[in-house]
Image (cartoon, rainbow, N blue to C red):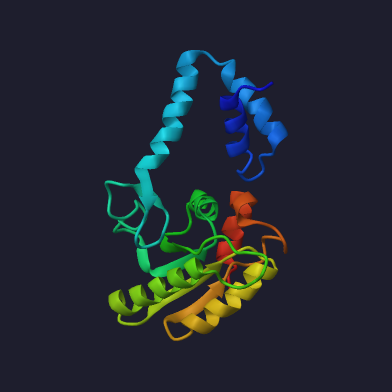
Length: 199
């Protein structure tokens, strides 16, 4: 009954977070009712995502033509203070506060098993190597900016152990963010408070 191209759209987009088949079905018919120029703009926006890849220092996104991202290439930022975050959206939320002037490492989404995946282990090893190579083996501060939940707490303990000799201090965001809350959804004032009250 539904044309194959629409069914493929529904099947593919239903795999995205928070999008089920019903919502995607509504979305596809909304898109099909757009004028041609608006639809072409959306298709171009989606296609442009192919021009992005990961920063080799912090794993945030950057244009493929650049070697490192805008944050890592900014000379006015303090490379001796590094915030470890779980996701890109956490980095964006912290940046919106305008108060953090250090660098980042995006660890990757934590899973429910509580164990670090290979990609997260590799990124932590990459950070260790970077600190040893670029900062004579020690930086001023590592801020653990992970969500205050079971997975975040478990990972924070691992990071403290792994980096205890590589940073003068290791802090965690203050509990302005409620236990079980997510950094991505915290307002700027709450995040700013959490940054100031880190311990």
